[in-house]
Length: 265
Image (cartoon, rainbow, N blue to C red):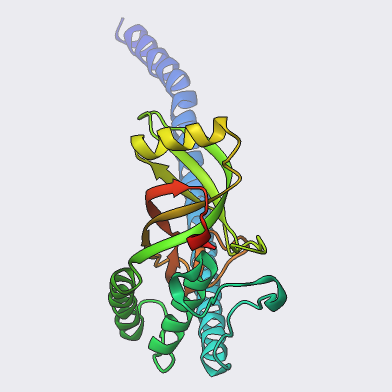
């Protein structure tokens, strides 16, 4: 009887071992695969980290090259002779564009001359340097002064290029300044917003077909703005580039817009 019982116990042990052996084998294989996968991922992370650091190094090198080129270009500009005003067609002009408020083009030339004179001997420095910070603060001061100094009254002959009504109900005109006699264009077109009375008078002139060339009288605002991202002219030059980090787009507060008289010629 005891022998029979032992026999059955032995069979039970053998059966249990037969069942557990595949499970143990599977667990061991799973652990090994997990370790292999972890090792593979660790290797990939190290490789990607090395590639990222290499890419950062290349980017920093390119940034240094760009800053070096910008500094070199700025040095060339400073060492070059002062920029001369935009060439004018003398035979087609009857106004004196050496006066800053004579035309939009005269204002742009005067602003450029003022900028060049102010910063002729000042180094821009590299991006992030103390020299660059000092330079930008100086541009801020110059822009504020220019907006004060070049604020003035104007009386310009203009040709109306386009008219639109804003959502607020104001009439806006796109106009081109021209020479009073030769009609030569004097710089870029600009937009003026008309007060109700001036707009009503302009509508009457349109109805009578007397709105070809008109005399715009009002207050000129240079609107010089500091743009810390604009170090050179760029491909479009809009708004107009005055100097590194400075640009402008003029506006005129229109007091009147009427046909020219003998006194306006």
